[in-house]
Image 1 (cartoon, rainbow over the protein chains, first blue to last red):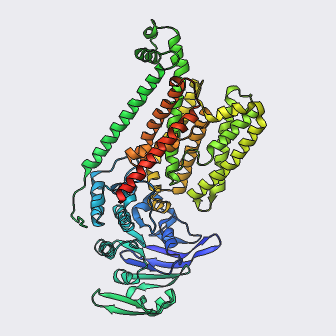
Image 2 (cartoon, one colour; image 1 turned 180 degrees about the vertical axis):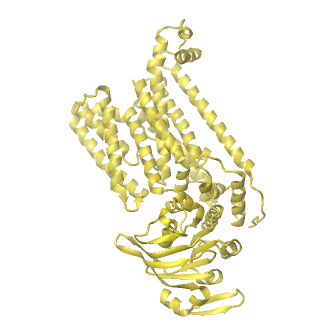
Image 3 (cartoon, each protein chain N blue to C red; image 1 turned 135 degrees about the vertical axis):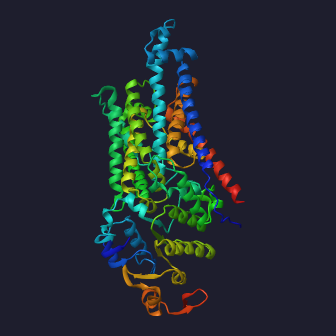
Length: 257
Length: 361
């Protein structure tokens, strides 16, 4: 479903985190959100999941205002892979992934065989089937991120929000997770919105890039159009060269020391 | 490292086995609790036969006086009017402290939390001390528990106000506010003790906790409060699981975190306040039981809560029976639970550390 932001603002105390954001996010694309630390990327995701409410403007989900969509229903529409993930209690990996099914299962009903199947598929896709019986508290950072990713997959939503979801993964697992997301976007017409730090991975996977700085959008558009030295200088204040790289089949960025 | 990428089918047998194992655990715990109630009804100054206890209870439940006809007329009175109210009270308070501790640990994301983390015990103790010191007897026997409850509720209210911000409740704020308020109240209690002169021993004994001379009215009151609270907690048990993954994740999965946290916080605190006002301050049950039970059932609150309820009931009933009937003189239950619970906690903690170290090397 179409997401539309209309002059959205968010203040934390008297500090403006998000300032006058307006854009349309049509479904079926892999969006990347790039920007320096503290540019409001995570807050933007919080606004989209309804975890925080905009202090100005409004967010439309389809033709409805986001704040009018009941939380339970929203949880069937979008899943979040958060940036920080810590659990103080020794849940097993399978239990955490099964939590992704909670929005689909009535409160007092045990999971069905269908839920079991979806959970097994999600674990297999995130390559954590081997850890299914392990305590999530005993996994490494990258393994935990894959568990959280599997949990979001199990939620089985048309919109997937990723907040630096591969930041602790090794390159093999990062690529594998991003391939999976890209494939869902291409084959199943789902939408992905990923906050990323790695500009080259963003260049490889995202069809559409949104550059943010100081809570504002610097520019957004198709990756080929907006990923250029000029944008990167304005957003990150670094000197770069951007070129088409045939091996990856995408625009790649190199940086000046 | 090899990783399977095959599409193995789900393993429902595992989950079903888990659920069956859990049902068996619950049935065993419930049976153990019933047995503990009957056995402890036997014990005391007058020892009552096992079958006699069953007959007295059956006679009361079915109304058939014939069952107790050939017995000493004193025995039914001892069991029904003296021992059972105390036994049931101890069991219910144990259950209440255990589930309250479970929920506090869950919402505060802190395994060190217990029913008294938010200063509920200090508030109750302050209220009780005021009532004892001023010799407020206008409600007869109930004025001290009532003041204790008011003190606990007022403290909770104040702590929540102090720790809420525009962001809703944060666990660090709650813990910090609880500690600060409890410290102030403790100083207040010390001052009251200083003022109390000859009443000081009454205050001290009340604070150390006791189930002596509990009545059926106490049983009914605690049962209603803790039963209702338990149902509320069970209703939110699944949301509490999600909250342990962090507020941001929980709210992206359809949980109204602010509302659920507030509901659970109030429920757990009211249960703790009722427990304190009925029995004085009994430590370690609320901290220890959730830990012990979590080792067996895992951290899923839908299993943890019922199992903690039963385990807490069995343990506090056991402790109360020891001080009432086994030890030569009755020592305050709060002291006993700390004396037993402290070392047990150390042992569990030490074993866990050893296990973790063993895994690492």
